[in-house]
Image (cartoon, rainbow, N blue to C red; front, side, top):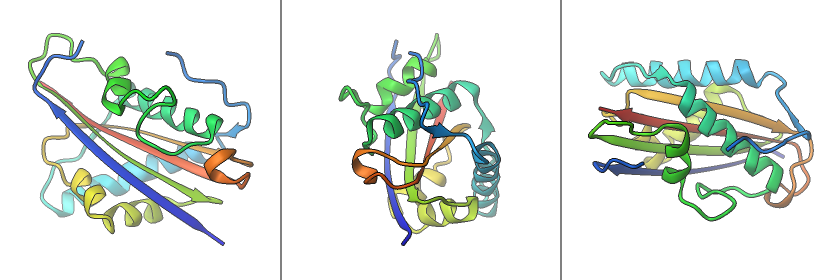
Length: 174
């Protein structure tokens, strides 16, 4: 039986907001690199089909996404908040700071699937969910970071089952 769960949040701030990834020895980066590239390609094709520009892959946003996917896999929870309860925008800001820019905004889409998911399936889940779709079609986003993690026996929320967790972090700094 396949399980799919998706969750979205977005936060915007006109304020200037001024870690290392947890160990995940139980994580497997199987074909997740290819999955990550494919999800970005699917998202950009979807955006272009709606008259929006493609998103540039951002190393800082990808690091934020990876840290979060790994943490959720290691601890066994599924939420935008970090395991310590801090909000997703604070987590992302550690990797994607404003610097001297006057405008900073980030958003996040999450999903988990057991046992796995492909890029078209990930996009379809997000497109079918109004808040996820809104994030995908937010015109102000300029960059994206993506991370997929696969574990063979996810703890907690994942019930010891194999699971693939995907975090997509969207951002703009001006």
